[in-house]
Length: 198
View (cartoon, rainbow, N blue to C red):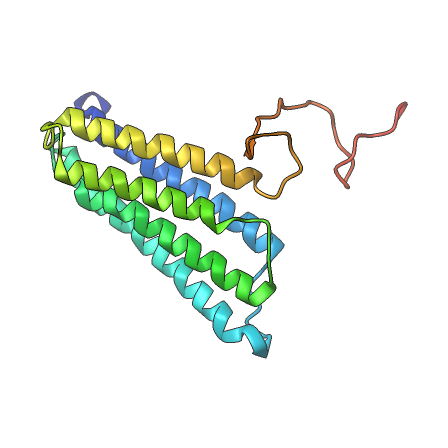
């Protein structure tokens, strides 16, 4: 796609954008989670739990590699079967949930809600199932692949937005965080606005 973009097809572009967006935002979220509750492998009471959390991280990275492998056939055929790629997304959410559960076991309750992960795991499972069962009879086409991958990208964007603002003190509409307009104000180290005249 990078070397010869003019020879690319829409599904391969959507697939790679969705996969890289998933990986990059996951990397950002992981760093935020570790900043709040790092691994405590030296604490005897939670050592095994925390080591399991490290192993879950390794499994998540393997699923990311699997996503790239399953998207590779799209490079040559825009109508290649992507059912395996679509089923990897619910698996990611199961792993995210397991990781979060282990973090709670080691550290206690936090503001991140397991039901958010469950809802997205179900939504991705429904998408994968619909793709595989093909009730509309459009399966195995570039249009079906493009639609499915666009759904993957939109759902991941929605999940990452919700996940990013969980636990934050922001305005909400029916539990969903409302976007905040960026400010150009330089904040003090503690995150507060500077006093007048400084």
